[in-house]
Amino acid sequence: MRILQVSAMVFVLLLGSAGFGQEAAQAPFVAVIGTDGVQRVEITGGSYYFNPNHIVVKVNVPVVLVVKKAGGATPHSIFLKAPEAGIDFEVNLKTEPTNISFTPTKVGTYPFWCTKRAPLSSKSHKDHGMTGTLEVVD
Ligand SMILES: [Cu+2]
Image (cartoon, rainbow, N blue to C red; front, side, top):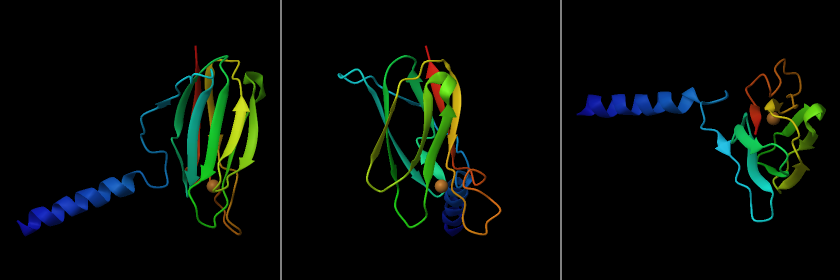
């Protein structure tokens, strides 16, 4: 019985660490079009993740990303540059939500990431896995 308990704990620990600091296998978050015709998605950023990190939106329908920081002193941002698709932003995350508005004009898969890097660190937050994907579909 004791061995069973310990192995169950190890299993939980392994599960917990598998998703840490990397783009965990997460079900895509499919944005719903609100009664105001806007696809609104809340994104929280922390060390070193975005939640959700895979977002699906419809082309030619306005999007509002409501972004915020999970908390803590570490600065984070969200950056996506795809001007050919009408998407181009870089916002420093605050604990208070910030709205990012755009209308995606081109179907495709667009990566976003955090541009921050700890002082004296060779690895950026992006290197630590603080990345995500915005998928624009028809
Ligand atoms: Cu960051």
